[in-house]
Length: 223
Image 1 (cartoon, rainbow, N blue to C red):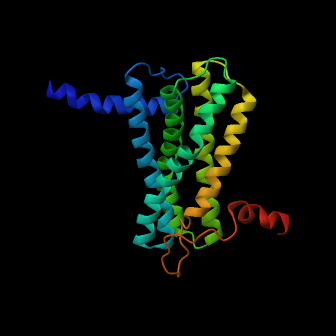
Image 2 (tube, rainbow, N blue to C red):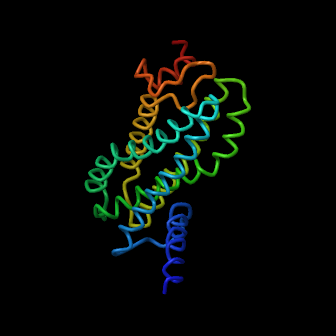
């Protein structure tokens, strides 16, 4: 019995990973949903933590690697916590078959796990690139690229998870995706630095000082 019990945990974790990454994974139901939500959130913490450590390696500072390894999960979970109530109200208002609270949380947790799994899978290549590239702006661009790639995968899984429960307004979900992206981008700005500039002293937070959108689009607009 002990052997069977020890094998059930990895099997359950594998089910959560498959649910986060594949459209053909079965939809969790009953009491199993709550446990899978918890496991999906734990996977999210682990994958995002690896991503943060890879980002922090650019500065060569152990303090920055530790701080970024903690801040990346805070970014992912914080964005989800801030936006989930809006999603739940939107789908209750506009969905033909509204999800229960636990079903909505399950869809959101699977999307979060998908983002984190991609971040974690890309953390080793990013670690190598970030630690060898001697150009701060290029390292920032790599970080944004990996972050955006994981985000797009997560949105794709989110949409597939919703459709598995029934039809839902495309306009409503587009509005939610925009909200999630905007909140996540600005929260990442608030929590920066994730990379840490070489030669500068360690900073846990830099404060607001403008915003994410001015930083990204300002040079394009000549601002």
